[in-house]
Image (cartoon, rainbow, N blue to C red; front, side):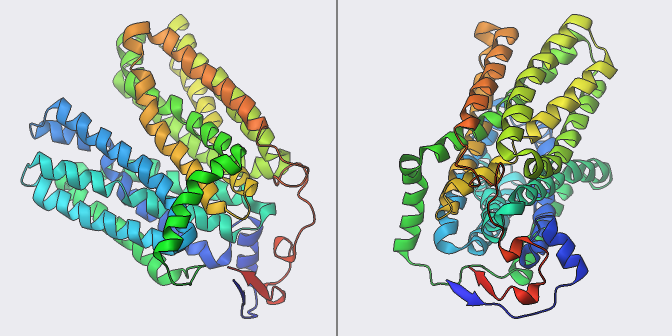
Length: 442
């Protein structure tokens, strides 16, 4: 649908944001995303030991997180599938409501009553919430951003997302738990999620305003499946996205134990190394977006992401194994590993542009890859028992070589992937005042 936008003067700050890939109509969405993800990530570092302290078994805790992971993978796919029919804002609001309602059920009728059945159902359904909110906004970013600065835009998206989910939330939880306790901290997560959701509700306008029909919804879901058949390269992109974070989710299962028990790091030392790696990854999410618009998106994903991850996965195992618990050397390798994982971020710009008429469906496949990575990573980690850590690490590293090869299959004709040749720029991509941009495609 094509509508006329009011000819309002563009401020210098708005022009600066646009040059960095942040479209003025959705600028507040990046802030809202960060705040929402803080609320979603608060529990990650302490929920398991807190449940253990309440007397829940390791099996109960593992079942709770496994159920959550499966639902997250499904919701990650649905968020893109439904965004095409419903519009991104509606998808985000559905995710927001689901998160709040079932967090209340989880806390009031599950955790506080120590009723594991209610906890399992509520926590699992709540898993629909954050992917629909976060990945719904990713679809919005790809719809509302000019191709020329798409790399920067998705870099900013992942920067703000991981800043909230992995950094601010961890520091916040660590600061307040000693003061108010774990249960009250879980209740505070609702406040962050509520603020983020209400910001989107009142500050952002849905780019799609047409009435939603059942037929449109079904079509969106069907498109998110059939696009792999009609455009196989979108499917390849989903596989590369799955490979991207595979090592991270596998390492979470076994690497800490190995580094502390066998290599000889103290738990505090290893936690600092791992946390620094995550901080480097947050920075890489932004850096890779800028590099991709300069060096080419395919090049950054393939070489810095694929080959970089292959080398650093092996180094992160072999170097400490050979030289022992050398803190400085190991943390350096961990930082480079975190940077390499972040170099896959331009996939979020590459894949939607493979299907410009079905960006939401393409994002759905990327999201599915991300969700499956969270599930398959621990499965691969299970190979440690039958084949050993070294062989498992080689399997993980080799998959990055597969991703390296598949990345080149995503290359389009010159100018179509937004990297090698961007083609003729449209006015919105250049430093043209908003008043001269009379038409917006919604």
